[in-house]
Length: 329
Image (cartoon, rainbow, N blue to C red; front, side, top):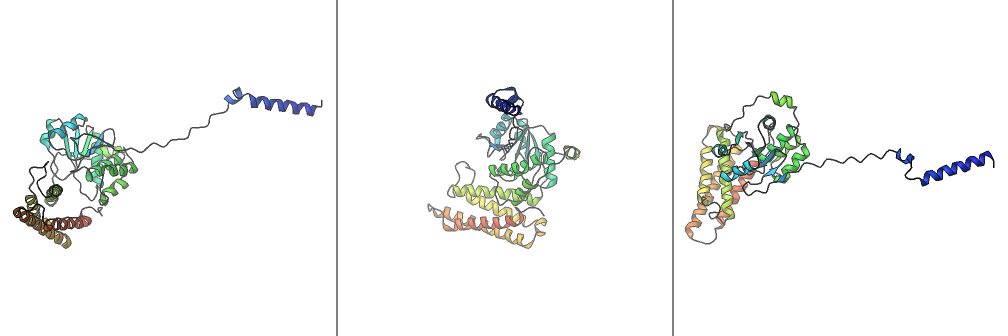
């Protein structure tokens, strides 16, 4: 056999052996392919199923958000969850007496529906980093301002990204019309912890609220009471025996009457003044219609009741679209 033929035979034999020896040493030297990197799943807002807390969701290990706690049962629920600091972004004064009974600290950092100002977002973030947690951040209903403040604070403190913040607000039911709140969640940026540490903040249990802002809080509560009465067929709701529909309409009207007497109101734009006057008139119409229906003894409320409430609600929505819900300039 020639040298060339011998070389071909040896080469063929080597290739055959290499192909058959699947568990040979040569295979052990071949590096395994690198595993495909898996994307970290986005953080999810997890609902807390506790009837003592309304719309409560856990955003992070130490941050929970929901509605304003009312009464002993709600504060006991917060204590059961391990909460140590309650942060209110609502305009109304916190229930300090009840919170203190359960060893909870309150911090009052109110915001509006137009968004979370940069200064406030940094104060909230500093609270999450330096005050004792876990935390419960709330507004009134736990759907709009509370969730926006909570997720924005998490972004600024580096505990959440913007996509997770927006997703959390969707889970909690934040209204699409609150453009300023959504803008805050989308555009918030992390701030170095050193800067937050150097930020001078005096955390108060009750913040001072401007008179008009405080009046708006009371209006909001009165209007929510009216909506509860409407659901009950314009009668006293079973779970709210203290509500009398005509009186709630009267209360709303009186708040507007007092607001329009203030010096702060006199400086407001003309369209705001006009909508305010219309709101007062609609509330008066609703009160009159409810009292007339109650006096008539008829089973169902008159059309005047529904039309007056509809006009009041539409008036509020129109004003809110221009002055309450839009982002700050």
